[in-house]
Image (cartoon, rainbow, N blue to C red):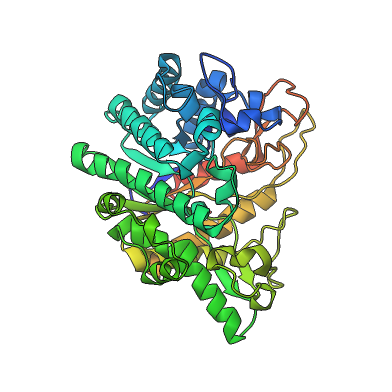
Length: 452
């Protein structure tokens, strides 16, 4: 008998810009990705037209949960203007197809693809107008889909708005200052809380979770300053957000820093009244790797949010991918424990995978034993967290079942259990071809994780 829940969620995660394509189809407006210059976003893997085929591949593998993203600019081309019924119909049809296949939809509202109009006109999430536009968008999606979508997320990897990555994902194009980071962090939290509060007040059958790209950071050495830097970064990049997700409160350490930096005005009392009501039904996360921090490389007086910019160091005890992502299954178990012990809510890993360069010979399935090994070891760590540590884990979603573009628009970094026949420069025929790992995953799901 497996140790995992009987209703354990097995599945797949994606984002709209990395999968859908159809960038100028059926009234979709441009997002910041559509104007970046990479032509790969225009077609992606064309899930907009091929979602039935991809859902069939999910169902055949035994997938029972699919986390997808509703593109803001597809359903509301300018972000704050009229809604686009053709775009909304696409997601309605997608949801119906998932339900028909026995797959639970998990909808995410924002995955870094700000409508270009809002980035140009208001400078993204630093502006009150964009916060209100997002809340309007989120409430409209709830109104349209709540009866069919039981699980919701607002922001993908929300703790990225607490580190310098914020300036790449929020639609912001101004000076990269500490004040700007903290203002955007506050506004994104306000937007999340408004949607979470709306669900808990008006949609009692729904669940909403906070999501973060949990940053497990080891000290580079026993040097006390390394240990202190790792702890402090964790407080600012992980635990502060967990406190906001579960109690509606900033970490006292973060509040003290904001006071010293004269950022108190950011904590607007009206906004904090909304944030203070925020609660989560589960905590979701992405997990790919861990990193190490060397305090001697951190410039004096750096804000903790910036510690990894200069302080990041490689761990000599871990293997890494060619993109320097270090492979650490035990770190996954540690992460699950850290979150559960803090929050005591069900934990939902919704992104986990390994990116590898792969070429298909046009005939034989790709023999990706390295992918099987990666997921087997991470699932073993997950099961240990459940069986030996008492962590309540509600599911495991891979990134991603089917090859998609990387977050940089690169098709050569492949995570999928199914090969998609395109390159960066050539769409080819976009044929879906299961790899060796696809059969392994199907067996794993069929046994509910008992057979790895």
